[in-house]
Length: 198
Image (tube, rainbow, N blue to C red; front, side):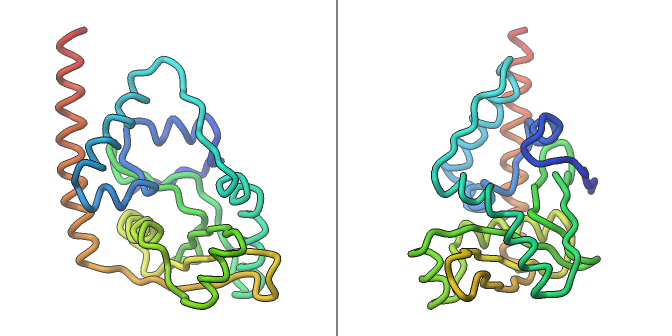
Protein backbone atom coordinates (compact mmCIF):
# COMPACT_ATOMS: atom_id res chain seq x y z
CA UNK A 1 0.00 0.00 0.00
CA UNK A 2 1.29 3.44 -0.96
CA UNK A 3 -0.22 6.75 0.18
CA UNK A 4 0.07 9.61 -2.32
CA UNK A 5 -0.15 13.02 -0.64
CA UNK A 6 -1.40 14.91 -3.67
CA UNK A 7 -4.36 17.15 -4.35
CA UNK A 8 -7.48 15.36 -5.52
CA UNK A 9 -8.51 16.56 -8.96
CA UNK A 10 -4.93 17.50 -9.90
CA UNK A 11 -3.03 16.10 -12.89
CA UNK A 12 -0.95 13.92 -10.52
CA UNK A 13 -4.16 12.55 -9.00
CA UNK A 14 -5.59 11.64 -12.41
CA UNK A 15 -2.28 9.97 -13.28
CA UNK A 16 -2.40 7.90 -10.07
CA UNK A 17 -5.93 6.71 -10.84
CA UNK A 18 -5.29 5.94 -14.49
CA UNK A 19 -5.90 2.29 -15.33
CA UNK A 20 -7.04 1.41 -11.81
CA UNK A 21 -10.23 0.13 -10.23
CA UNK A 22 -11.20 2.81 -7.69
CA UNK A 23 -13.52 3.25 -4.75
CA UNK A 24 -16.11 5.34 -6.57
CA UNK A 25 -17.17 2.17 -8.44
CA UNK A 26 -16.81 -0.22 -5.50
CA UNK A 27 -20.41 -1.48 -5.67
CA UNK A 28 -19.98 -2.50 -9.32
CA UNK A 29 -16.69 -4.19 -8.40
CA UNK A 30 -18.35 -6.14 -5.57
CA UNK A 31 -21.32 -7.25 -7.69
CA UNK A 32 -18.89 -8.26 -10.49
CA UNK A 33 -21.57 -8.25 -13.19
CA UNK A 34 -22.30 -6.16 -16.28
CA UNK A 35 -21.65 -2.99 -14.30
CA UNK A 36 -18.05 -4.08 -13.80
CA UNK A 37 -17.68 -4.80 -17.54
CA UNK A 38 -18.93 -1.30 -18.36
CA UNK A 39 -16.66 0.24 -15.74
CA UNK A 40 -13.58 -1.57 -17.09
CA UNK A 41 -14.33 -0.27 -20.59
CA UNK A 42 -14.37 3.25 -19.12
CA UNK A 43 -11.10 2.67 -17.22
CA UNK A 44 -9.31 1.29 -20.27
CA UNK A 45 -10.70 3.95 -22.61
CA UNK A 46 -9.07 6.55 -20.36
CA UNK A 47 -5.77 4.64 -20.49
CA UNK A 48 -5.62 4.61 -24.28
CA UNK A 49 -7.16 8.04 -24.98
CA UNK A 50 -4.57 10.67 -25.81
CA UNK A 51 -6.41 13.41 -23.92
CA UNK A 52 -8.34 13.31 -20.67
CA UNK A 53 -12.11 13.37 -21.05
CA UNK A 54 -13.85 16.25 -19.32
CA UNK A 55 -15.35 15.12 -16.02
CA UNK A 56 -19.11 15.07 -15.68
CA UNK A 57 -20.43 17.27 -12.87
CA UNK A 58 -23.95 17.78 -11.63
CA UNK A 59 -25.43 20.04 -8.95
CA UNK A 60 -24.82 17.53 -6.15
CA UNK A 61 -21.19 16.98 -7.17
CA UNK A 62 -20.54 20.71 -7.40
CA UNK A 63 -22.08 21.26 -3.95
CA UNK A 64 -19.98 18.43 -2.56
CA UNK A 65 -16.76 19.93 -3.89
CA UNK A 66 -17.61 23.35 -2.47
CA UNK A 67 -18.67 22.11 0.96
CA UNK A 68 -16.24 19.24 1.58
CA UNK A 69 -13.70 21.45 3.36
CA UNK A 70 -16.43 22.92 5.61
CA UNK A 71 -17.67 19.43 6.48
CA UNK A 72 -14.13 18.27 7.25
CA UNK A 73 -13.57 21.27 9.54
CA UNK A 74 -16.90 20.72 11.31
CA UNK A 75 -16.08 17.03 11.85
CA UNK A 76 -12.59 17.91 13.18
CA UNK A 77 -14.11 20.47 15.58
CA UNK A 78 -16.88 18.20 16.88
CA UNK A 79 -14.72 15.10 17.22
CA UNK A 80 -11.62 17.02 18.39
CA UNK A 81 -9.39 15.24 15.88
CA UNK A 82 -7.04 16.18 13.07
CA UNK A 83 -8.07 14.94 9.64
CA UNK A 84 -5.18 14.30 7.25
CA UNK A 85 -5.94 14.95 3.61
CA UNK A 86 -4.41 12.50 1.14
CA UNK A 87 -4.95 12.21 -2.58
CA UNK A 88 -4.83 8.53 -3.32
CA UNK A 89 -4.08 5.22 -1.61
CA UNK A 90 -2.63 2.74 -4.08
CA UNK A 91 -2.83 -0.96 -3.35
CA UNK A 92 -1.08 -1.99 -6.54
CA UNK A 93 -0.94 -1.02 -10.22
CA UNK A 94 -4.59 -2.07 -10.66
CA UNK A 95 -6.39 -0.92 -7.49
CA UNK A 96 -6.64 2.23 -5.40
CA UNK A 97 -8.96 4.63 -3.63
CA UNK A 98 -9.28 8.35 -2.86
CA UNK A 99 -10.34 8.88 0.76
CA UNK A 100 -11.77 12.19 1.96
CA UNK A 101 -9.49 12.04 4.98
CA UNK A 102 -7.54 9.85 7.39
CA UNK A 103 -8.01 10.13 11.14
CA UNK A 104 -5.17 9.13 13.45
CA UNK A 105 -3.71 5.67 12.86
CA UNK A 106 -7.00 3.76 12.76
CA UNK A 107 -9.72 5.76 11.01
CA UNK A 108 -10.91 7.64 7.99
CA UNK A 109 -13.86 9.70 6.76
CA UNK A 110 -16.13 9.72 3.74
CA UNK A 111 -17.89 13.08 3.29
CA UNK A 112 -21.14 13.50 1.39
CA UNK A 113 -22.79 16.91 1.08
CA UNK A 114 -26.54 16.35 0.72
CA UNK A 115 -29.47 18.41 -0.47
CA UNK A 116 -32.22 19.10 2.08
CA UNK A 117 -34.39 16.08 1.27
CA UNK A 118 -31.56 13.53 1.32
CA UNK A 119 -30.04 15.00 4.48
CA UNK A 120 -33.40 15.03 6.25
CA UNK A 121 -33.93 11.36 5.37
CA UNK A 122 -30.46 10.61 6.77
CA UNK A 123 -31.40 12.58 9.88
CA UNK A 124 -34.49 10.41 10.34
CA UNK A 125 -33.19 6.97 9.32
CA UNK A 126 -29.43 7.16 10.06
CA UNK A 127 -28.89 4.75 7.17
CA UNK A 128 -26.08 5.01 4.63
CA UNK A 129 -26.87 4.65 0.93
CA UNK A 130 -25.55 1.26 -0.19
CA UNK A 131 -23.21 2.68 -2.84
CA UNK A 132 -21.52 4.85 -0.21
CA UNK A 133 -21.32 1.89 2.19
CA UNK A 134 -19.48 -0.10 -0.47
CA UNK A 135 -17.15 2.83 -1.08
CA UNK A 136 -16.32 2.89 2.64
CA UNK A 137 -15.72 -0.87 2.69
CA UNK A 138 -13.23 -0.52 -0.16
CA UNK A 139 -11.54 2.34 1.69
CA UNK A 140 -11.27 0.12 4.77
CA UNK A 141 -9.91 -2.79 2.76
CA UNK A 142 -7.29 -0.79 0.87
CA UNK A 143 -6.20 1.40 3.80
CA UNK A 144 -6.23 -1.50 6.30
CA UNK A 145 -7.83 0.80 8.88
CA UNK A 146 -10.12 -0.24 11.75
CA UNK A 147 -13.05 2.15 11.21
CA UNK A 148 -14.43 4.73 8.83
CA UNK A 149 -16.86 7.55 9.60
CA UNK A 150 -19.54 8.44 7.09
CA UNK A 151 -20.09 12.19 7.34
CA UNK A 152 -23.34 13.52 5.94
CA UNK A 153 -23.31 17.32 5.72
CA UNK A 154 -25.79 20.14 5.19
CA UNK A 155 -25.05 23.56 6.75
CA UNK A 156 -28.72 24.62 6.55
CA UNK A 157 -29.66 22.34 9.46
CA UNK A 158 -28.99 22.89 13.17
CA UNK A 159 -27.31 19.47 13.22
CA UNK A 160 -24.91 20.22 10.35
CA UNK A 161 -23.24 16.85 10.25
CA UNK A 162 -24.42 13.32 10.85
CA UNK A 163 -21.64 10.87 11.62
CA UNK A 164 -22.13 7.12 11.25
CA UNK A 165 -19.23 4.82 12.06
CA UNK A 166 -18.66 1.86 9.76
CA UNK A 167 -16.53 -1.15 10.65
CA UNK A 168 -14.85 -3.63 8.30
CA UNK A 169 -17.19 -6.28 6.90
CA UNK A 170 -15.34 -9.47 6.01
CA UNK A 171 -18.08 -10.70 3.66
CA UNK A 172 -17.92 -7.41 1.78
CA UNK A 173 -14.13 -7.75 1.62
CA UNK A 174 -14.48 -11.20 0.03
CA UNK A 175 -16.83 -9.83 -2.64
CA UNK A 176 -14.50 -6.93 -3.37
CA UNK A 177 -11.48 -9.23 -3.60
CA UNK A 178 -13.37 -11.47 -6.02
CA UNK A 179 -14.29 -8.41 -8.09
CA UNK A 180 -10.65 -7.28 -8.07
CA UNK A 181 -9.52 -10.63 -9.47
CA UNK A 182 -12.14 -10.58 -12.24
CA UNK A 183 -11.45 -6.93 -13.03
CA UNK A 184 -7.68 -7.32 -13.17
CA UNK A 185 -7.96 -10.33 -15.49
CA UNK A 186 -10.15 -8.30 -17.87
CA UNK A 187 -7.77 -5.33 -17.78
CA UNK A 188 -4.81 -7.59 -18.60
CA UNK A 189 -6.77 -9.30 -21.38
CA UNK A 190 -7.69 -5.96 -22.99
CA UNK A 191 -4.11 -4.72 -22.68
CA UNK A 192 -2.73 -7.84 -24.38
CA UNK A 193 -5.37 -7.66 -27.10
CA UNK A 194 -4.53 -4.04 -27.93
CA UNK A 195 -0.76 -4.51 -27.66
CA UNK A 196 -0.95 -7.21 -30.33
CA UNK A 197 -2.45 -4.66 -32.72
CA UNK A 198 0.34 -2.13 -32.20
